[in-house]
Length: 95
Image (cartoon, rainbow, N blue to C red; front, top):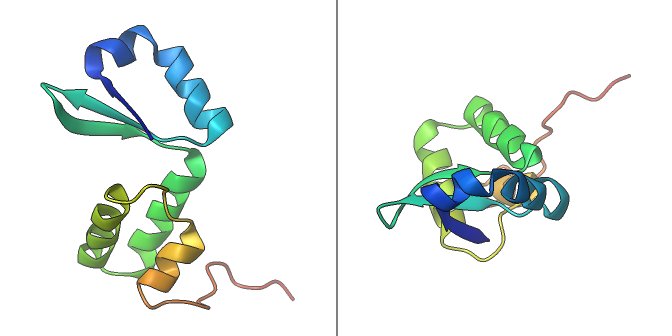
């Protein structure tokens, strides 16, 4: 995971965006030495939105907190398993 200051992120935004898009690598932005924002791949954001729909906000925030402490971001399936929702269908199957 890439970590950078807000000043450097502003100056190197195009490069950081490319890392997110092409390397699927989240970027953590720090202000005054503390993490304050993130740029994440769109599939990560979509997974977060799906989680808000399926489970309570407290569970989602706890899982995301656990994810920040890990090395690799969780896939949607891993998060669902972590929340005890393994096998839950995110989308209705078409007939």
